[in-house]
Every structure is written in structure tokens, then in C-alpha cells.
Image (cartoon, rainbow, N blue to C red):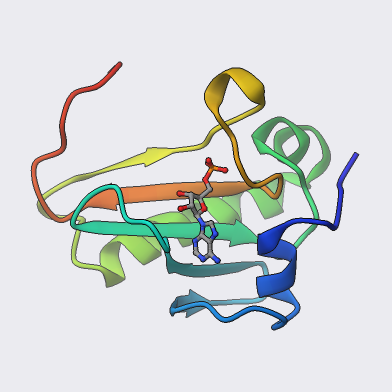
Amino acid sequence: MYNKENIFYKILKSELPAKVIYENEIALSFYDINPACKVHALVITKGLYSNFDDFASNASPKMVKDFFETVSRVANILGLSQTGYRIISNIGPNSGQEVEHFHMHILGGEPLKKTLL
Ligand code: AMP
């Protein structure tokens, strides 16, 4: 169940500012306010999905494809495609998901620490 009381919903509605990187009909990308590495971007859906499971179960196959193409495009815009990058999506309490609106993290711009993976 999607709860509109979250920061990314407010960013989508332009009620909060964001440093936008890229936008299309289905997604919005902006810089993470608290970067975990040199380049840390987020890509959020414009559709209201609370996490990856919700998105994978309820979005159309075309939407899922277009969203992941958008993530790849943003990485390219940021100049990360050649040097490599990591994508992450946190789902639920054990992951530490803070914002309950589906989003992917894009991390790169420098060699990334190996944490769990
Ligand atoms: P997650 O823990 O996967 O839900 O990630 C949420 C991310 O959103 C964290 O990395 C936060 O630093 C980031 N964040 C929280 N508020 C904002 C904001 N107003 N603008 C940009 N990023 C934010």
C-alpha cells in the first residue's frame, strides 16, 4: 500500500526541491542529498510504487523496461558507463529502506568499497 507521506512524493509534486539530473514521462532522477560516494544519484518512478516488489508486481512490462533503460541512461549522462557503477534498491526494514517510494541508487565516480557484495 503506497503512502503519500514520503519525501520523494513531495519532490515529484515540486513541494520540495531536488538537484535534477534527468526527467522523462515515467521517471525523475536527482542527486542524493547525502551522497555515499563521489557520484550518488537516485532514479524514482513517477508512478506510485512503494518499493521494488510493488513495482515489479504491479507496473506493466513496458514500464519496467523503460524504467531500467532510464537508469542506464542516467548512468551514461553522469559519465559512469565506461568506468562502471553500482545500482541498489532497498526493500523493507532489513534493507534499511528510508523512503517508501520505489527508487534505484546509482553509485560511482570512484572505486566503490566492497560491503556485502
Ligand atoms: P533508501 O534508504 O534506499 O530509502 O534511500 C533513501 C535515500 O534518499 C537516502 O540515500 C537519502 O540520503 C536520500 N534522501 C533523503 N531525502 C532526500 C532529499 N530531500 N533529496 C535527495 N535525496 C534524499
